[in-house]
Amino acid sequence: MIFYPKISLSLMPITKDTVKKISRLARISTNSKFEEEMIKDLNSIIKFVDQLNELNIDNIEPLSSVVNEDVTLRDDKTQKINFKDDILKNSPENNENYYVVPKVIE
Image (cartoon, rainbow, N blue to C red; front, side, top):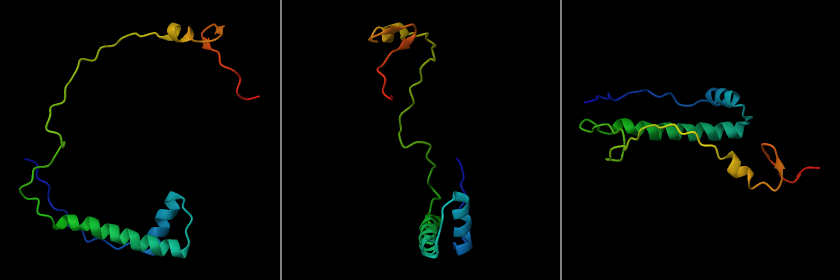
């Protein structure tokens, strides 16, 4: 059984300096209106995610997959497949090992 302790974080609210730093790292130009909106949005996201700490997960097994089926395994076999000749048969013109197409850019 894997034990996942609850992480109790005292999350710091997002400030204008944090938004400026993130914007600089992401190379996004900002103005004061954008910064205020981002502060509000990011703080609401953090509050929403922080609600996960309130869940009681004591008797819940962690999931590795939502599907209860075994994965079908197969042997890895290498095959040498050469379709070059078959593909070149469709070319309107023969030019050694290249597929010739009409000129697009003049």
